[in-house]
Image: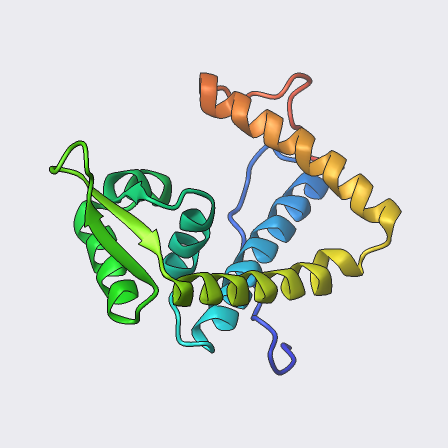
Length: 175
């Protein structure tokens, strides 16, 4: 039974030749990713902004004057979707678009004072979320989690790089 404000359990895939603990860890990660996405969406949409807009403002804070295509590459979004996001931000006064002075074919995007204010507000929201979740763990647990996630990220990168999912020693179900 789920409690109010809790996400129902997500059934995990049936994995053959994988030990039960590994399956439970995989399912826990899936649940965490799902809840993280829901929490982030809730936090930003309650403030009338969409997650891609928040990310675009954050990117512009450190890359003010980026081109639309550069933003699209980082956001992994199509040019029409990036244009829609920027149009919304422009209409709300958060950004301005200007042609590149050296290459008029390029359009550069700049934060306005309103855009900087909104980005700072979004950053504060994210800080509160991170502090209330990860920051609530003990320092020792955070260090161990950082170490474990780092190892898992490295292994995942190796799988992406070479396509290999075979584990040395093989994953055999625990009896």
